[in-house]
Length: 246
Image (cartoon, rainbow, N blue to C red; front, side, top):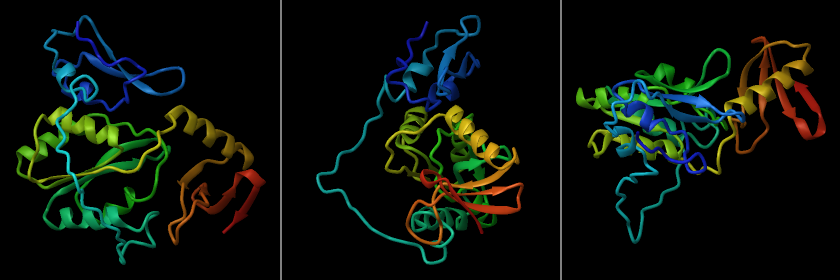
């Protein structure tokens, strides 16, 4: 049987899940809500593609630069629509203008966070905004490989662990693949996030939280806000238990 990364080292990047051609690996949540791979013994053929695609077991080679280039920027068309200056949107526009595809974290209708792909600027807002939750990758890496084989430009944005997982899964660099990661201090689990939403909903007569922003978008700062039943936008200061309708 293949030996996957220990849970203390595994980031749940899903590279092994995407690499398994026999669907012998499932990503399963533990008691704290973090997802880890589990191997089905009856489906595994011991090809060990999962091991070769794991960035923990088989770290991808990374070129080291003595003096890496660093830039600071904001995007004027996007800075009031994004939570950190709109840099992601600027790169996304570049790829979309070339007829490419952009993949990033998005909320679904129940505010679960998962990676999706878009191919138009009109859908760019689905990927904007900070999301401090572990995103479900699903089979996104497989989709990216197919797009690259079709000679498409691809932008993938995720945590450093997810970017490392994609690079390990692909096993080589692609000229038309642009990778963006972010400064990450670790992410809470989906279970923690959904628990918070349930408690927040209870404060408003159990009405559905239909939208949530972790950071303000019209300037730098935290100041999270939520929409209740697609109607009211509530600015939240949990420490003071203050809720202001906007």
